[in-house]
Amino acid sequence: MKSLLPLSHWLPGVNQGPMIIAGPCSAESEQQVLKAAQQLKQLTPIHLLRAGIWKPRTRPNSFEGMGEKALPWLKQAGEATGLKTATEVANARHVEAALKHGIDVLWIGARTTANPFSVQEIADALQGTDTPVMVKNPVNADLALWIGALERVANAGIRQLAAIHRGFSSFEKTAYRNLPMWKIPMELKREFPDLPVICDPSHIAGDRTLIYRVAQKAMDLGLEGLMIETHPTPDQAMSDAEQQVTPLQLSRILSELDLRSPQTESQGFAQELQGLRSQIDRLDRDLMETLSERMRVVGQIGACKIRHNVTALQVKRMDEIIQRQMQMADQLGLRPEYVEEIYHTIHEESVKRQTDMMREVHQAADEAC
Ligand code: PEP
Ligand code: MN
Image: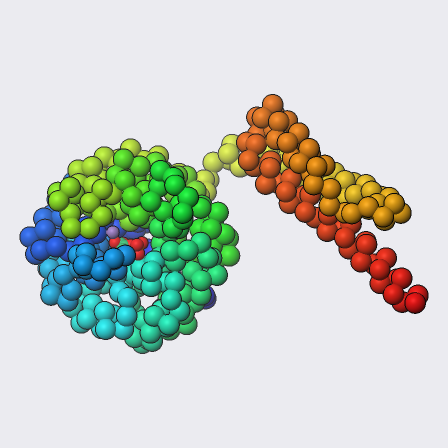
């Protein structure tokens, strides 16, 4: 993904602060889209008006969107309010129809991103157009699949490209509809620093009371925008009713957000940060030296086990170590689950070191035969 253009290139209004995308989950009627757009325009500054035209629904016989006839509703609502428009596309036919009706920005939904055939078909239909495209993460927590979809679109020559983080489906019962798993969008940002990543708190939360919290977290992490489903009468919405907010509620959510910038010119900040970062660098060096020293002793234990013909994995000992370290974590103000994860990794590597040593002994013995 090369020479991607910043959001401010495709939406000139975006210069400071997050890009805001709002509008109903689905376009339900000409009146409803227009009303959403007008209320938004009146109550809070947004950059892009969204509405779903074709809805991918889990079960048949639920509302599947109004289809192509709703495209002019979205376009006209955009024109009436001076807002650019965006909708979801799931195949080449959708791309052609949306572009024919002058929709400005397209996004690929989570279910579609999970299917490389569909993404390629969409990318082929986009070839030669200069359409801005946003790619939602796939429903499953697979970063490579997300990157693959972004690359397919980028390879079609699209340089106005962004990713949307909308959480990942899971069997785990949590307060969220889709688990945020923040480390996945963070990793995407680390790999592609020029790719704008936007958060969709509505689909992560699945519940309007949790939207503010998710949006604030996205801002604290430095994501570049928010897509929040907004409906004039959310409780009557034909899809995703529980997670939609009114334009007034959206304006409150946005005005309460604490916004941070990725950088600052402040000298004091730079000096303080430098001092603290050099402490971290020193501590990281100590950590590495301790890990290396620990591994040296693991090797000695390995040699001892080999001499006495004892297995590398000692389950009881592993359990003891993890339990003890989790207790210590609690006393030291660290999250026990965090320390548990670290110790599983440390222990796994220690056992690997010892089984590698055992393999070498077998090989040496084989060669001697
Ligand atoms: C939507 O934005 O309305 C939608 C269907 O989203 P997702 O693809 O994230 O489920
Ligand atoms: Mn929705």
